[in-house]
Amino acid sequence: MEKITQTAGRDQLGGFAPDFAHYNDDILFGENWNNQDIDLKTRCMITVVALMASGITDSSLKYHLENAKAHGVTRPEMAAIVTHVGFYVGWAKAWAVFRMAKEVYLDDGEQEQHGGFFGQGEPNTAYRQYFVGNSYLKPLTDAKDTSVFIANVTFEPGCRNNWHIHHARSGGGQILICVDGEGWYQEEGTPARSLKPGDVVTIPAGVKHWHGAKADCWFSHLAVECPGEDTSNEWMEPVTDEIYKDLSTMP
Image 1: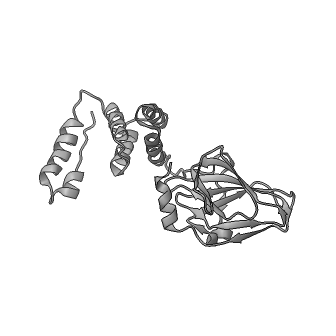
Image 2: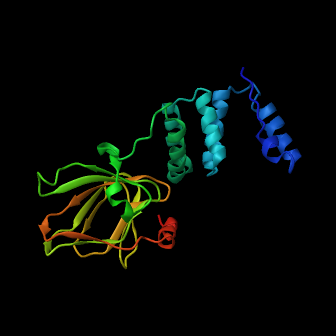
Image 3: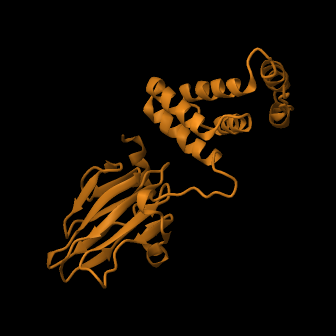
């Protein structure tokens, strides 16, 4: 049986809390983790479940996810474990663990993909000045060939566009169709609306608004530009950190 060796306690707390470092490195990991009554793979799975149930999603969870992967817990097994436990300890905890597990279980050299079915697209450099954070754009129609322009817009966690208004003499406006992740939409003077895949937002011309990702999640929506006469887009001030951070307490 492979032997688990841990030095994090002494490395980080040896001078400040030597007894704790001893218990962590020599007892918890040195004796408990090397007890052969339970195999390492099972012990890894139990530990991930215990941390998930406790709502712990810091570096310790990442360590134990990596440990689980290293000791034979496959990606499908981990997905099944987190899904099953989510029914008992809470769906929000499952989401939090999945976000970290996806990073841990990426294959070597694999890049995490975002954007949902339509794909992430390229960095949205042409409009970078109107966004806080990084966004990506994948046009799905060519404005030269059709009267309706549709693009998949992807926001990294925390990214949002500035307040803006779609102007039109008649018609116009925009429709958002959410396809991946979780985000926010807010019109001036109204509470923000939480968005998930399948949600649709109709934005009339002349309404000041913004939209973007939640702080801990990527987000993608299709942006459908509604036909109209004399249409234009007016970009305005950024959404402040104070306004954005207040949304973290909302469901």
